[in-house]
Image (cartoon, rainbow, N blue to C red; front, side, top):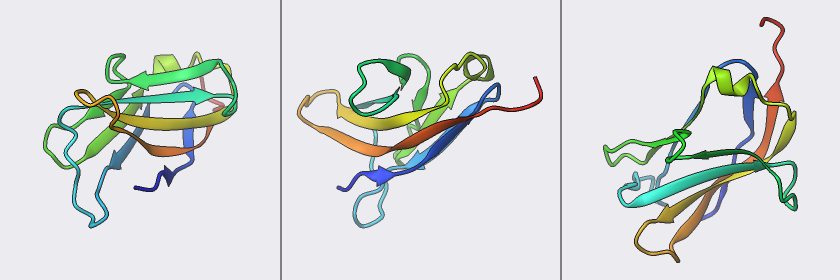
Length: 119
């Protein structure tokens, strides 16, 4: 399965919500039962420093339980307000909880912060 490329924009001081649907090659939803997910942002691909991490454990990723492949990234307004960096790169990995060799890089791309005026 090819990795999708998607540019993400986080508006500083506003709630960040981004929805995706995982589908197979025939366009059918992929069930997320038994999977875990993690998104990391770094300055560039070689950087050791993680600027932002979203996961199921930290409340930054939600999987719908309806079998429709719905994935949601979430970062609350109080958290986005504290962001100090302006751009980077990210990827999002889906991992099978019972088969550690079953890992898919589902989405990747650039990410930037939009600095607002109103505070």
